[in-house]
Length: 275
Image (cartoon, rainbow, N blue to C red; front, top):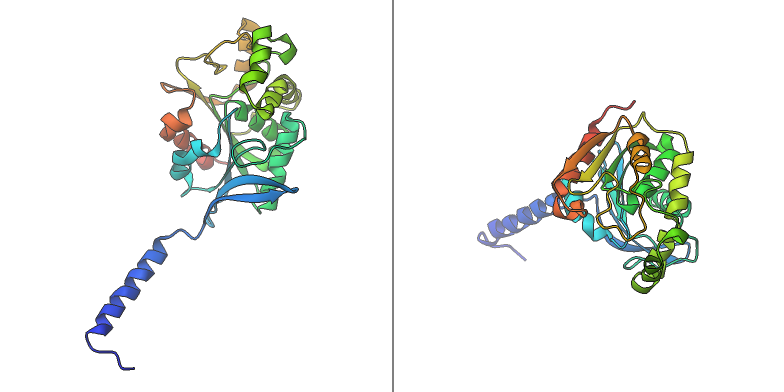
């Protein structure tokens, strides 16, 4: 078949357009997907940047999901490979029978990163309870971690032992939260003590983002489960004496309401020279 003179320019235009569209689609993007890890479903989202020198790893707060990081991911994906996920028992990730203490959660996350071929160094970003887990990761495996961004994070000893909660708080924990969330709450004190017992990481660039209306312990409401005494405040303040603290006029969910603040902190840690 012979192409007419009028069709050739049209076909060229079509092919050129397709080429431009294809070139504009980032080959590194891996959409949210369900992986099978140790026989259970795990929801993950990865954006691979072949030129990146580090991987940014996001850990959600209690009852939060990876969707909360959407705008932050957009702000850092050009600077690094990024990974976000839902812990077992959240959204489309299946619950597991393993304890929900920080050590188990950190090891499961680290194993997932390896299975997906996401190599260190890592910039660990944790919101609220996820910030406590990321502190444990960084102290357990400092050689794998470039730096930390703690987004209105929890710190060791801020939450009381669950058996010391008032009766209404203990009852509410099981009435209003899932089994997974309740189990995580039960292990917060234990996880914090794991963090406190490990060597310091003062050589790492650390940015602490703190919500302005709240104390540095980042707890918005006291249900009788939190320690607000002076000794605890002093302990938390001394945990990371070389960290940069940014007090933001934002909500506790600042990754949702003020993602530009979180993204800027991550880029700052990515750009920091290795110590």
